[in-house]
Image (cartoon, rainbow over all chains, first blue to last red; front, side, top):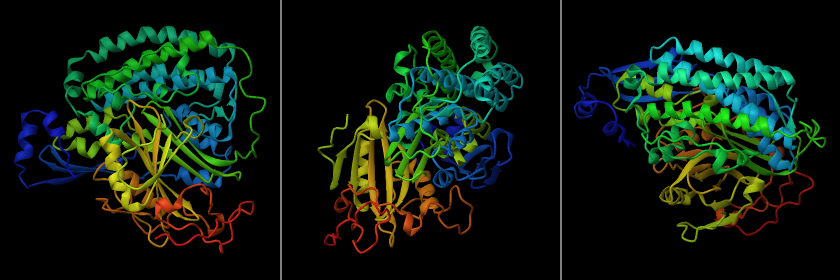
Length: 387
Length: 179
């Protein structure tokens, strides 16, 4: 099942010549599960011919926790904290995906103000996730300093989210029918200050890093994904939008109140690692725009519906599939209920899982160092892949 | 959207759904033998694969294939029912390569065999004999999908003699065998 169009699109003359004449003298290398550039415990078995990759196969499951089984042995409410632990970088989006699916199933109403709080928290999460990706990706490519800047900004986001959620990483902020806490004056003033600061930081990131010639050499024309490949593997998020498709769940399957905000879906047509890089950098600007509008429009009222379900609530028989746009792509939660207090089935669709599944095809024929760049450009979060 | 496919290549019952309520705009119920042609049809219409997953029901194993489109709204779900005695479904990896991991995961979790999947190793579970973790006890298996047209899926309804899992629900009436 080789669809090795990638070799014609990527790499230099050496890469292209390589496919025609392998030496037969190959080496099997294990990258990971403790390799720094695999971002956690991902292992990739690679067959190398010199420096070129003949075959790559990811090995998963090192942090598999069987979240889907936990969903069946816990009640609907008890399962909420699990959602902060699937994707630790954009936990808010997973919060929303699960809560949204159950609300759909049980027909739960969400107050206006809570909708705005959800948007603000989720978009802050997106910025924070993209910042970690940005710092870590450049670390993969040998640039040490940017992650210091990224964490400097992210620290402020974590402080802000700590005010409203009480935690810094594994958020459990969403509830059926709203969110657990309202914003405080300190949060609002801190957020306004942060947005102003962050908008002045982004041009600096561009000047310092994005326009850097070494970065461009490591990213441009590396790991080209075309639209058909994205379809065959179900790639979504910045990986897809870096291939020229303006597909964003916030627009394609509108949920919450995203239809009220004026924001762009950044798209870059090149399909290479640089395009994915540019999509994420632009998305942070768009998230800032969304948060500003949400802050300005937010009405008063309650943050949690007075009719919000109690812990022992049963949503009734049925099924619901609900998708949101996470920092890595389309997060889907499919819930089936047989009318008891526990879900009958919870299926978690993790975007990184689908995005990584195209790596073996993408890595064929590329140089090992470029595989590191490709893997970083996919923005993988291993706990989300393994679930 | 929720329009029905007029030229769907394999026999199957198409049921439009309410996207706002269930997140599914169209469900297509198929016999296992039809899944590859159905997947090819979806691929030709430029649908992308969202995921493949399973359900352990009283009637057997149900595999669900979720598809969405980059330009059109909605979600199309292909539903295939395999019997518990022979839980085999043809693999669609020849059409959607991304299905390989989803099918392996579903095999790990339910024991459903996807015939033709190029990799027969476990994906998320350990490389040893582990009982599929998402199997239900006999008593807990739901006859949730009473409304599903089983005949179209090539699998028999639950025999009436079997006690209904949920006391409130009447047992599905026994009908003639539709092999």
